[in-house]
Length: 468
Image (tube, rainbow, N blue to C red):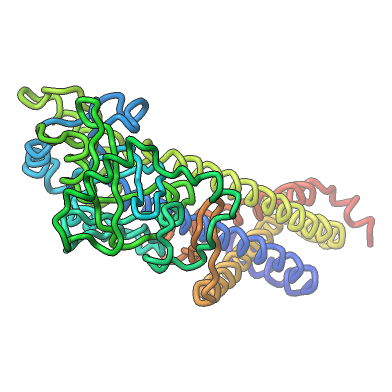
């Protein structure tokens, strides 16, 4: 195809403006829809990735079997000498430069009680290093509009605790903690829970309360009881800083976050403290495979393999992330195929109609010496021009629509969540989506023009001129 072929193709498109505009409209709307949904799904995926990395880190070191069997049993799956292991990770010549944060945490199950109100509820507690968790939540490689619960204990007393809104509601602490939208429980439920905390647990809580010096009781105080390393229960009194929204209602109804030392006191008492996980956050997600391989090698070095440890990435720790990827990929693929079929038939119909209307023209060109390849190239050039114009207009429409959506302040609440996330469409910078969608539309345009072009090239000169 030469310049003359494209000039003729453009003239033919302009000669049938209405049909050409209808075809272009289908292509522009189709490409715009693909790009808008692709940009939305891309932003949602990166936002979820940011949230999970802020929560879990890129990698976690755990005792083997803890992920599958150790939930609620930290005493059997604790990491010994975890501080020395953290120093080795930070100081490793290969791994150290990739690591942004290394922090430890201890997860345990227990029973939280509000002794003053005779209320209790099971909780999933986490002991954290406040500075380390704050550093984890500063990671935002993609500039995603995603946020995690802050769980900030920095500058708080050693016995401070942050609880979920659901925990505050169950312990009837809404008034003390100024929790909004917290109606009192129905009378029937109140009547069914008059017995309150069991006698033995209440006795432990009472002993802990009596052990506090006079005048040190805080306005909002709870006790948490958990099984210790030797099986006997331990109880600690904690000062509630605030109640936070932990996102998922299932988490919100059980979540409590305290200082690591308090959690270790609950589980290990006076024994050597341990943790259930080391959270490792990298500067860039692209470094994850190399960092995971090096970390596995580091754990197998002589002197380091004193206990059976394993390395898990955030996609394993949060299966919902991989499931969400599969959902968005399947939806994007379905929409892309549907729109591609529509464009295919629209352009194909346009080119087929053009062949029927220009049969005499085709015969004349063949009689003047134009070869079959020239006729085929002419119709392919028309399809290519339609595709190029459609790509340019579709990109412009998608960019304008994305800018309007991003400025509209729209939000939605994902299934199972209790707070809304902003709706964003991420197009600029996502060259894979832009180039891939544009190339796909051009391919569909050429494919849809191919069969009519072949039919035009196969016309016999005598049969074509007979239509005069």
